Image (cartoon, rainbow, N blue to C red; front, side, top):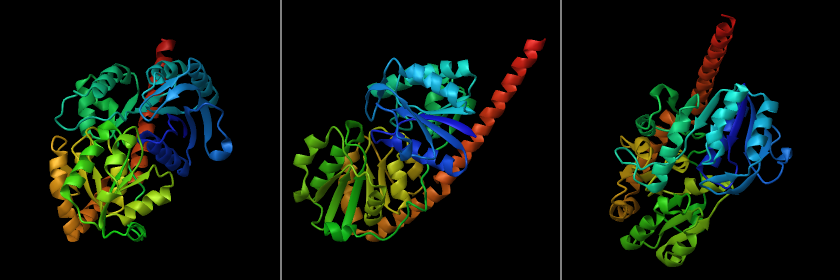
Length: 387
């Protein structure tokens, strides 16, 4: 199958991880994948010899949204016409091109699938955040023109249905991780940080991630000197948080870690993973931690509560994160048998529901369905033209 993938390769964020993992898995299964992404210069094919890359010009891009140049639409259209894929899959980048894609693909008679990553508050929550409300309301009228929209949970599917999308056009295919690569294993991390118990946060340091609630709870809990909290990641809040929560409180700032093997080593060496987000989609970092056998504490934002429900972890209330963590952190510190059990349950949940292997199988089945519908539609158009 020839797939034109439109997504992000930088800056690092969940969308980048999703695009990298899924396209690599599709290549491993023998599909031909072309990766169209925003870059300021032509991409060196030596960086990814098995995948043709196409550079889409842009004015600005961040972890949240992208502004393409006026020429980007022409480059995209000409590239798709030249590549002649069987279908187009867009991992939506919060870019104006997302809204133009249905028209472009309709002109080229190409089936179009979207993965809609935009985070949300969680089950039962109203779309009251300005960013959420704007994104969902803006996108819904355009998403109806995609052949399929992939979301990560039933909760997100219900949100889009309320905004006018047909249920049969929204497919729930959760994020997945490689359970062999992300797995329990040896690590020298505790020796490196001279710790008996290690807690870790991994992700962006931005307002919606609510990291300050974790830092304040850790400080107020007066954790033991041989317990350490590792902050893995970077973002706009780093400079305002780091000076007030340092090593004197057992907090270590590791910054952005690009090396995947190092990130796996960190997870394997830690005991507890904490995700205090106010909004989420379905956190790949959470799934990676679960696969490595960590006890996981995460809020009920987005689909994360679905992932942890039924004892696979501890679900925190977004309204009471700091108070709940203030109680749970010492509990996890003093009862290693509890965190070991939670870690085992977390890994089992990933193996049952969230493996990359199953994710790709579901995606292949969806591709086949969409292509069959496209052939049927083309056949009907041909017959009608003859009558």
